Image 1 (tube, helix red, strand yellow):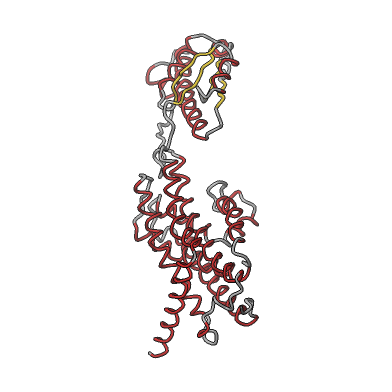
Image 2: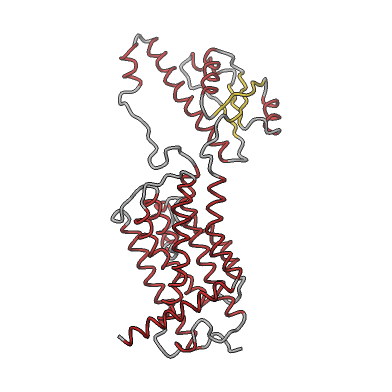
Length: 398
């Protein structure tokens, strides 16, 4: 009992000392308390509009036929597009695009009607303003919807010419009835797809950066073994690792609740999971990030500003490695293996399943087990790095 009490007291001493270090550093306070909440709020506000409605476009109709007029009428009727201008030539439409009066151009060539009449493939040109992904998406969705409907209309007309009408023509047109349902992202919005992964990465990067800044500040000021309290340098060093980890865990638990539960609900992002499953999943994620940050900070960070450079460089790399931009099944094996060095990879994949898809813990058992393995491995490396500090005195006395 006395030994257990002594262990708990040692851990409490380390935790208290680490809390004092955190609140004594204004830069770490900014990273720990402001950035994890400010970034989700900013990005959720920026992407609060999931889709662009009534995108102003110009149409160049050189065919001037019933089919082209019908296409323009249907295009104007879509929720994504509004036909604002009808131009005589491409130069006129390009001037409107340069003046930001329109964000897409639809070009119907002269041979549009002749090709349809001769049962050949007709073409329509779509030129989208790529200054915003939303403009391109709205132009593409609206034009695709009209093209599909127009193809059905043209096919029904051709069946009628062959004497196939009514129900028989509709069966020929669509032998198997189908309905498109967008799972877990009903609006098809970019924000609902992008923001859950971003929130996990923000937690990963700010927590990792703050821990490394504390280590870099210690080494930069050449404070003698400040990471290891003097009274514990001759005892089990793992208590230092546990005490510091508890400090960061206590700080980031309420931050995770706010940024990954309340903020998505405020902005009406798709959220099918419950708070209990989300926090159970995030526990090994936070521990893995903490021990990973302690390992890197203890061994490799020599100056306080070094982690800032790593933060800027690795954030985009980590986002690609999660599989959100490029599917992991298409990645080279070397990148797939490297991705599992970082807790962000299973963290993003599992969090999206639990939060956005309503998955149970059994459904994310692979990601959950991976995070616990990472947490255990990095706990060992973090403790071993402290042993190296104690043995070889990486920090010189001041």
